[in-house]
Length: 353
Image (cartoon, rainbow, N blue to C red; front, side):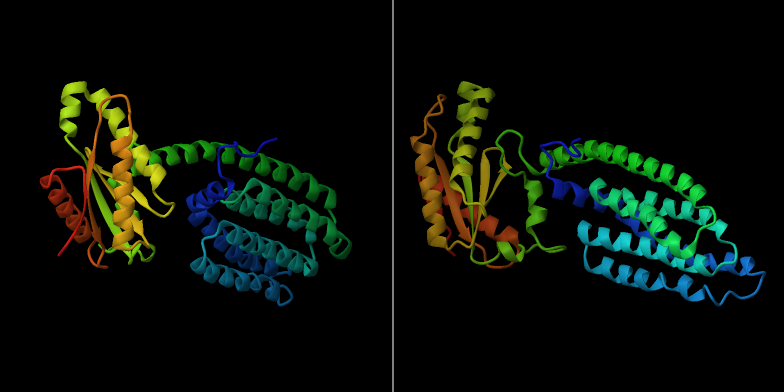
């Protein structure tokens, strides 16, 4: 039985799923740990109304892993780390409940308590992979069986007959919900692609800009910082192509130009359709001379390429980022592009202050 479709990256899917259910799962863990402490009231009742000193340590103990869990959640959002941490706290609640049951004069009430603990698994399972949740949940049944020789549950048959169907139902529900999340995930990915990529050319759209900048800043992130050069391209006389051959043929010209750049750029370069026939190429870790050489190579490929519509050329301006507002380097590249077009087009000009 296949858990995920072949075209889905499992790690990205499970991380996305965890992020979606993270807050719900977090509070389920907190309520489970605090709820275990609240059972101390019923412990006192089972001891005839006296203070149940025997079970107090067991009822307080889950607060320790709960505190560690809260601190860990502030340090990482990795679904694997948080998954095992979550199930550890839940199982601590189970183990400590069994610890308390060992001292109780009437152990039959653990049947109800174990079903309540099943709800904790129901709540947290949605945030984690089905392949992680099922073994972690199964451990509850295994723990009941392993502790029976020590605790001697008087109603072990009832205990199992109540918990095993709950376990099966929760595992099935989780499997169904994970499959439903697959559709949500795929839809979200499609929307992200549409928002971040230009459907015609395959270049990034301008929306990618916010992902290139520091939070609440107009400066590029460290990995895009100096040496960083920016090139702005413009297809020469593109309006005439549309007017003479039609917009459908113009779209072919745009796609072919974009393919040339996409095949020429490095993995770290970022290619953006800035608007109309204007494109930008961000080249991290590239000095101005090397950037001009790369753009010149692209210009020559475009000039030689026959896309079956008409010969085309491109003009380009290249500028070096100074570590300040990203708009300044784009403006500088635009000024260099303007110079290239005024000087006769089909050339690359480096910005000079």
